[in-house]
Length: 60
Image (cartoon, rainbow, N blue to C red; front, side):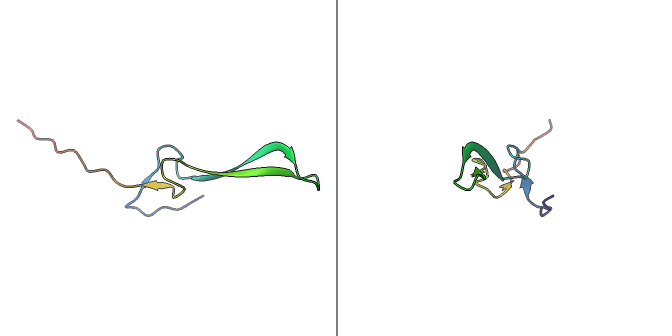
């Protein structure tokens, strides 16, 4: 399981697992299944997103 720095937010789309290998139905000449590696579009394969600027709340 990946470990994250405490000041980084985990990507909400991939939950910190930014790259996955997907098997296809095609087989290579030696009989093994072919895989495609896909990265998260939101975090671009880093697993973390930049912290957003906090919204200031004023109490009346």
